[in-house]
Structures are given as C-alpha cells and as structure tokens.
Amino acid sequence: MTAPEEQGDFLEEIARMDAEGTSGDPSEGLVRESASDAAAKEDAATEEAAEAGSPDPEEAPAFQLESQPEPPPQPPPSPASDHLARARTMVREGRVQEALDAYLKAVRADPSNLKARNNLGVLYDELGAHELALEQFHAARAEDPENLALLTNIGEALIHMGRFEEAEEELRRVGRAEPENIKVRANLGILWFRRGHYRQAEAELSWVCERDADNGPAHFYYGEALNRLGEVDAALDALRRARELDPTNTKIFHTLGILYDKKLQPELALEMYKKARDLQSR
Image (cartoon, rainbow, N blue to C red; front, side, top):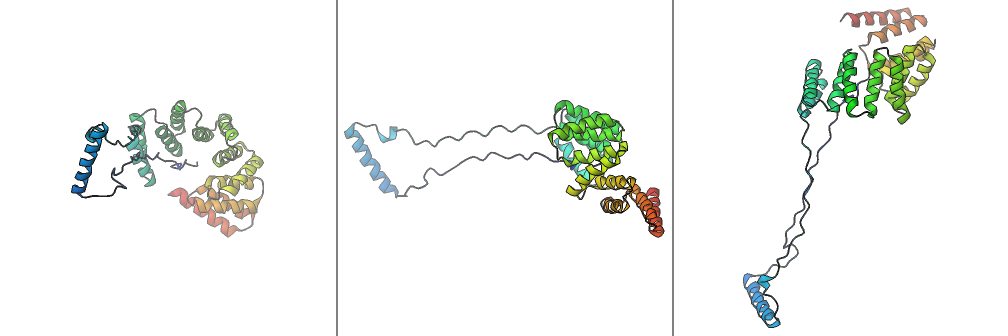
C-alpha cells in the first residue's frame, strides 16, 4: 500500500501566525527643542488665545493615534494535537506500536478530529488490519463526506479486502473530481490487476510510472501485469525499478526469478529465488 504522506505522506499541521500590531513614536518627524524655548512658545500661545477668545491650549483635545483593531482570537489547539505530534515522530522512527497507541489517544481525546481518524486508519491498513482501518475512515467521513484524500484511502482499503466493486466506486468518484490524481490512478491500476484485467492495469500503471518514478507499488504491479502479458523485457525493467524502491519485497525477487527463467538465464534466476527465500525467512 502507498501511505498518505505523513501519507504520507501522511502528516501535516496548519501553522499558526500571530497577528502583528502596529506601533510608532508619536514624536516621530518632530524637531526637538529646549525646555526654555518650549515654555516661551507656550506663554505666547496662551496670550494669543486669550485675545482671540479661543480655548486655552491646555483644554484643547490631545492628539490621538488611530487605534489599531484587535487581532481576531485564535482557536484553541485541538486536545489531540500533542498526541498527533508524538505519533508522527514515532512513525518516522519506526516505533509502530507506540505510534498506534498515540493515534488511539488522539482519537479518544478528540473523536471528531479527521486527521487523527485518517492517520490511525492508514496505519491500521498498513498493518493489515483492514476492517479496523475502514472503521476509522468511515468515522472520519462522517466529519467530512467530500474529502477526496479520505475517499481514496477508503478505496485502497477496500482493494486490500477484495471488495473491488465498492473500491472502484470510491476511486471513480475521486477520479471524476481529479482526473490526474496519481494515487487514484495507481490504485485503479492495482484494482484492474487484482481483477485479472492485465491490459487495463498495464495502461493505467504505465501512465502512473511515467509521472511518478518513485512509486514502488505502481512499478511492482506494472511489472507483474507486463509479465502476465508476456512482455518479458519491459517487465524486467519495471521490476528492477521496483526492487530499487522496495528492496525487501520478496514478491519482486520471486517474479524476477521467473522472468530470468523465461530469458534462459538460470544463474540470475537462482540468485533471485535465493534472495526471495532469504527475505522470507527473516
């Protein structure tokens, strides 16, 4: 599965910005003068005011700076924020169980937090707990029914569960809104492969691989589709790239062994089979 970037890719926070106030020196631009000069000017002004019947300068309204509007109040942080931050750190460090616990605490602290629900679902899906993943995704969907990234994650989980018609419905819905969404197109390609529609899978995944050279699952299923179609050399190229992106995937090495057998290169085939066995025994 391809994780939303944290999915992945799959994790980002909204930055908060403090409103900036405006301040200034009211005397800015005025010429400084001695205390005696200032007093003399004040006496002269008083006499002139008395003669003209004008108000005493001391009674004149003081110069007022234009008041600045108060910055709008910032919403309080979600009670799940600290747990989400810890979970992201633990995911990066490979501490999966601790990340899972932190996401669960985030959901308990704020059950309506879409990000906590979604990220917990993604982690469950990667761990193979697809039913639990779907439960979290549906809870998040109740908060934001039109969230396209969430709908894509639901479709991906449904593929893993073999519920292909439901998966296609969700992915097509996102695809209508975002026809060039690479993740959606990759999942549709995988869906076609899982259904045995290898030519459709090859066409969809070829499009994805051209635009996303680092998409490991897309290259793997693209190579597998090409293998089923008998296009050995193209399949080898795709699976070699998949091996670079995911060097611990036993299925990649096993299929490479099959392809080298087809190419009548038994030594390379044996090497690939041995690597697949070694990885599987770890």
